[in-house]
Image 1 (cartoon, rainbow, N blue to C red):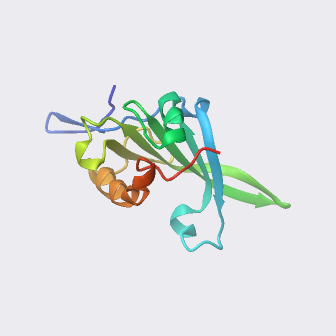
Image 2: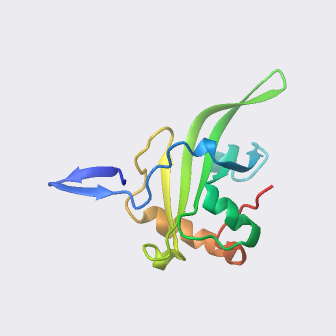
Length: 150
């Protein structure tokens, strides 16, 4: 079920996309490393891991993702010691959930961002949907999904 974001004068606000429990057990789509040489390092630096639930895994072949598809982008810090780059703390988890009825205004996808180890949404309700969707429209040819399964 959906986790409450906050209580305000007796009203509960809910994340439109819940935190994905146990996503590290899903299909690992790919990983990438953004180093300090990249212009987006300040915001995006670290190791990017992408995971897909079984429905989303099926969608990667055709670029057509059915309702119930969930894709998780996990960004973790990195630390280098003696030539070895290792994972550090989690920076954030971004989540896409396909539901063509609930998320008509954003191409059938709901978006949310969870900072660090939080399991409650970090952005104001709707903020992730707007900013994420605007960027993901550049991936129209693959169902609004940037990643390709390796």
